[in-house]
Length: 109
Image (cartoon, rainbow, N blue to C red; front, side, top):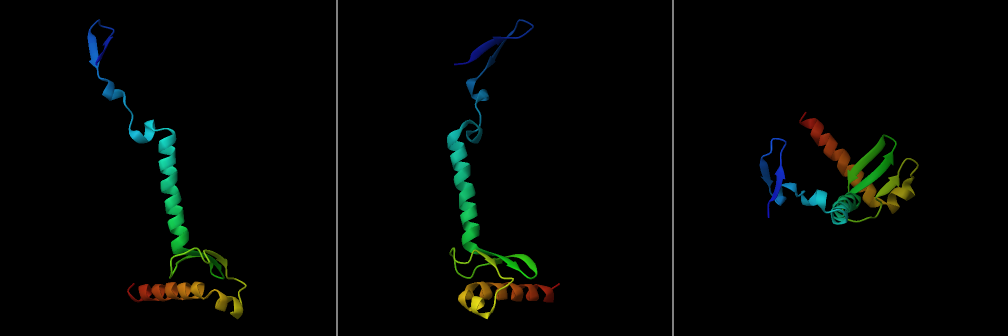
């Protein structure tokens, strides 16, 4: 049902209730906050499962993982010796793959 308002000139103006509705994301309140939180959490989990975040001698590097999982997501490789590289072989392989990819990109520049 349309509401009727009177303007300053005395004419009646009709407006519908639909024009006052907000989009779902603004009107949802707690449910919208929950949906945005779930989307944000999914993005963070995807990043943590797909990338190594490494502190190396060259600085901070983000390297794509070879296998999907949470093993060795964060690592400080600055003081690693041979034994550490053997224990964390996936980090070494991923770092080597990224260096090979960078070298291939330089060929085409």
